[in-house]
Image (cartoon, helix red, strand yellow):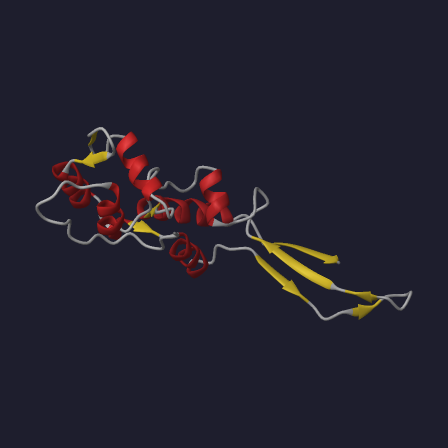
Length: 167
């Protein structure tokens, strides 16, 4: 089941917390809960059949994690676009070439020659930082601010590279 946002609800009262309780309360997948536990961000113990999660450690995690400090991938993409940092691809109508065959012309504008600009590429190249345990990917806003400054500063000398190609 794909989760699209991280929004916490209250923990169930008066019982041991199992993975299903946390999946519902934290609104994350079971794999994310397992990652949080294996990276010691929440505590758990095995009772013979299943893991029981420590209520205090879960509450501590819920209080320490602030969704307002993060962007989703879609939000981060929009922030980049709003700041003029993106690559564009444009198709043109088919034209006839010398042999009377349809020829599709396209234009690709790149923000930088180093790599295509996308949230995935910025993560891959170390420009953006994410919370390593959470899925969906949550991008740290502080890293987004630093990245925009860095890219805008380096783009003062870079002009859009335009590739016109026929497909």
